[in-house]
Image (cartoon, rainbow, N blue to C red; front, side):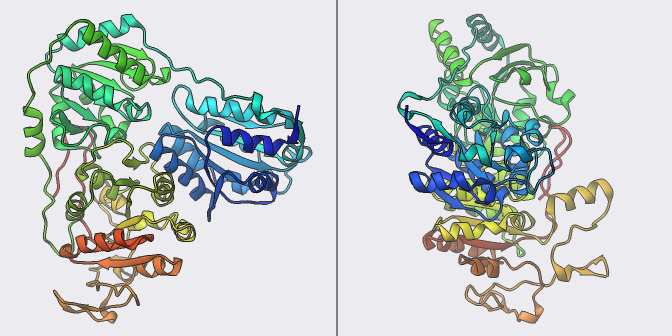
Length: 594
């Protein structure tokens, strides 16, 4: 049998599993792995600026095309910087392989330099974590890692590699080491039959499209069932894009934040809910008593731990979403169920209850930004967003038509996820326009990754909604604690701890970043500008391009310049400071704002 280093075997397995890109940062504890990456030369590596950015890039890459994302870090703090990304991937069911270096085995448990038991640390936020003790185990661990990440509910795995294990030489033949088979759990035929019985007997059935439908590539089967039976459809936030926003049966989204009025209204009128690949988390359900009501639930999920965890279903089906939906379709066809009359009420309700976006105000209302986004970009655009009022407005107002074209971190909500995730998504889908929608505070969390996009010529559009606030926390502080404390970001908005009005902002010159003539409103002198983080100057300092927009009539032209530039492009849009986003504690009590 051929002999090779354990790390050459590891890279060979990555190649055979289809890995084409890796995101990481080399360090002393992982250099043997990097040597094999260099020597074999078939996998493209992207040098990141922080390990959290690296794992978020791998995450965005995985979401964009439904594959495994791979990231690499050195030992100690490099490895521990992966924790937030692993937690994010786990709660959103994203297959991410995190490879970490480690001190030699003899130093483990001795508080040696940059030696931490990362496998133990990440155990609660991974499907499995390994600290490989023998070089000969490397091929089997890597093969099993891919099976674990993909089988059942997807999720992350960490493989920790001590230096002496990395340096070891083993007998390994890639030709006789195929991928491990992935088992997909089929539904029980009796459960399928009962589910169809319940759907046909229900007075007001409803189908809930969760993120698991997208992960299982089962959107087509889901929509076919809805069309045959003419059942209204709602989605969770993670299911956004699983059915076109303008499909005649698409009522909207359900939730206490990322909702639509028509989605919540339709859900509340239902008598039976067929929920597929949904976790029923608190941001979706709100008050459980209101959400559950008197309605019955059929819950399909590949993870048995989800059935009954938040909502006790009347029928729980623990099975693969695609196999279950296919079986439901076959059962419907077997019974020769005739197509129901076209349901025209849903589209009319959705149109009637759309939230207003056509504001002409200056400062710009955030809703107007999404009107321009919806009208400018086509259905092939991939959007990426993260936690904050920016995400809530995006979830409520953006119109998405295709699965994997709206990428969001739904469960963990780590600020900063979206910029590196957008870079990963663009690398995965170079044929697509990728647009990040972010708040001014969230941008500042992983902004160090913007030079990565410049360095590797990865163009994407970053739309910053800039209100000079921690917007979501400002709104929560205002209504729940009657305060406006430590949420101000614009430096000139604070005088001895007191809130004051922020001065008018100039349109920034894209070359100098200072005040210029605004033809619509006259000249704004630089000394009259308020001061805050200058996104335009930061973009330019990184080698990217940026501009500031203060007039809603200029948004579309800025979007055009960004797309046409072919480079990473930051658009800093100054929005009205204290616009609130519609939300509430239960889906029947959403407070609406204009």
